[in-house]
Image (cartoon, helix red, strand yellow):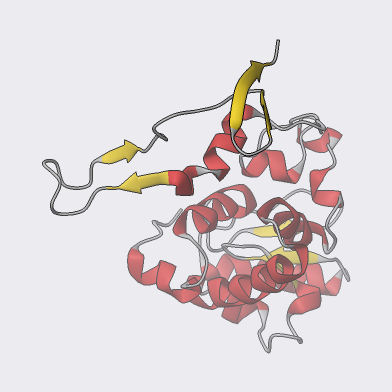
Length: 206
């Protein structure tokens, strides 16, 4: 297992470090020599020499497999000009990961869809539960909750989306970086105003 130090994270500089860490943990448990085998058990070599030997065996058996920190699938080797040996270098692996996840995100528009695309090549499979993984989906294993699709969204999720309405007080504040919510001076709720030249009365709803 390796530590994703800042220098290594810079190999995929356009991807947030949290996303890199979460995907790396789910994909390889931070093992740069990890090998995922299609329709088979994962392999966790301890050295590059051992990893290359196992790849040779898989190639001889014509098996599908993924390698390295972010588990790059062999079907992508030619497209990105890499080999299994090159991908056992964590930085090279992250460079390819960045290209794949960026393409998925630009097409999918949301991170869960991008993660599904990275995992399966499409925007839906990664959101489906799998018996082989304790009935969880790939997106769940990354850390997303399995929430029903409501017509009316969660108040908490909506509040986060409106976080731009929170004003950050600058250096002139008594406490630098203080977060303050700005409220309007008054609120009129469920009110109908009847008027000709000017208001004459206010009728408040039930």
